[in-house]
Image (tube, rainbow, N blue to C red; front, top):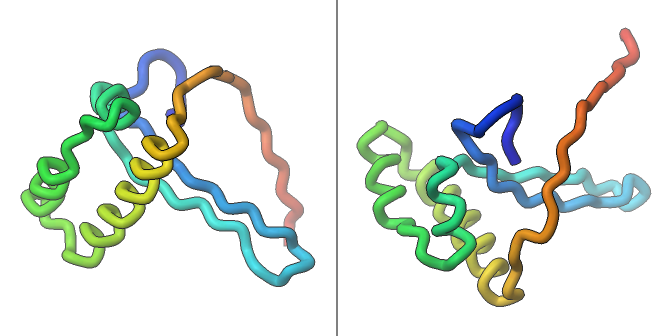
Length: 102
């Protein structure tokens, strides 16, 4: 997923877990950011997590942030590979959201 018009500068890799409200659980959106050039590598199983972790360390990310990123990235990569997921459709839309004042 990316936001805005034109070519993306950042791509959000997301995992959404929807929970029905009657269960009392909340829906969760987990995501991490990669560059557009890393998307084909992620989808083909050639994404270099170790290099990304080193970049995160160089940028001063905490050990907890790195571990959280690594866990989510590993789970998503494993799901893509084990289920042989491939991109099949691209959708583009204009979203409008309304909120009630309170």
